[in-house]
Length: 220
Figure (tube, rainbow, N blue to C red):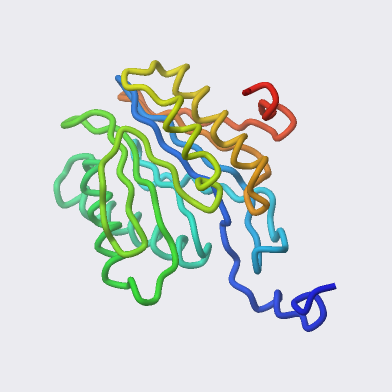
């Protein structure tokens, strides 16, 4: 039994999303996904059913990684400010605007926060978009991006399997397989897979139970 188990330090540990998050752009939409496990002290599973794919506007979502309290605080603040921005503009917000607001919060509070995000969605001006917002407030637009502790195990898979111009179904397969691989290797990623597909028509949610995920041997 280790020291953390004996003295109960895990009780005061931050709850972490200890996660794998991913977003992929295709012609007409984006696919966003994550696992559902939250951990404490990187050893104890505090929840198996956290939804880390959060809707911040009608057709804009974010995935969160890092400290769950920090990520939820930033997400709630962004939802409020983005809603106010939309009312001021009298039109739905742009995906880039949502990412910029999140970047502003992350940069302003960079010394206190321990959280990173993916912002993805569809807007009337530029269609589907994927942005990565880092811990320090850097923002990068990409065709696809991955994040969280489990991402270190799937960079090779993602680089090898991603190709520009994938269809919706190919993106769903790519995302599901990547998350399954990460959950198989990373002890703080697990649970079920949450997926959201965002297009001009709106958002569609999917949930894949752990026993329905592809296994590593089948992906070889």
